[in-house]
Amino acid sequence: MASVHRARVFAASTLDHSGTSVLIRGWAFRIRSLATTTFIVVRDCTGDVQCVMATAQFKDLRVKLDDAIELVGRVRLDARAKSGCEIDIDELSVLNSASHKLPFNSSSKLSAVGAEARLEYRPLACRNDEVGNIFRIQAAALRYFREYLESRHFQEIITSKIVASGTEGGSNLFSIKYFERIAYLAQSPQLYKEHGVAAFERVFETGHVYRAEPHASSRHLTEYYSLDVTTQP
Image (cartoon, rainbow, N blue to C red; front, side, top):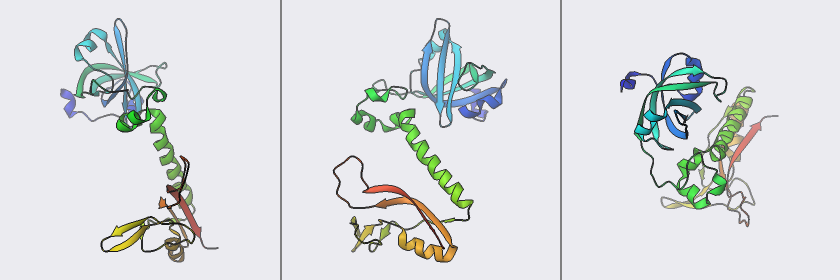
């Protein structure tokens, strides 16, 4: 394909290329074939874009859901499309074909899929918004924590998660073999923050902490992600 010499355009940016020919790569997220026209929603790391081609031409390509595909087409404004535009496909090829034995598709309703299947096919489940949005929300929360604190002159620090002893009384520790010694997973960055605040005045850390606390529920604190903030008076 001539597309090998083209720069890739991501789905979220297609509206900026109205009237031009673009190269798109992603997964076939949804496919809807009518008598003369087939609509293909392509999903990449930035979002979705709807693409259109003749059904007769599409049938010869044998594209199915969750195939990794590459296409070249012209961007056309269309207010009815979710992204504000559609791509009229000129060329389409399958980069990597999905298995014919998938228990579900990335566009499936995951409430109808068992937990074991979702875990075994984790990349496929994460491509679904129901699961993928959990990671996006987590990332957004961390990003805004950082933006807020850095705008107020806090220094981010990254501390060790393997420690020689506990930093807080009353919390059980996870012990690990550290060469010929016993070490522990950190239950708090408190000691490091005390040193950091003496050096930088305002510090924060986002990171994992571990507490060996027995639990009898599906929600517990044996491992969690924490935002720790310390400042001088």
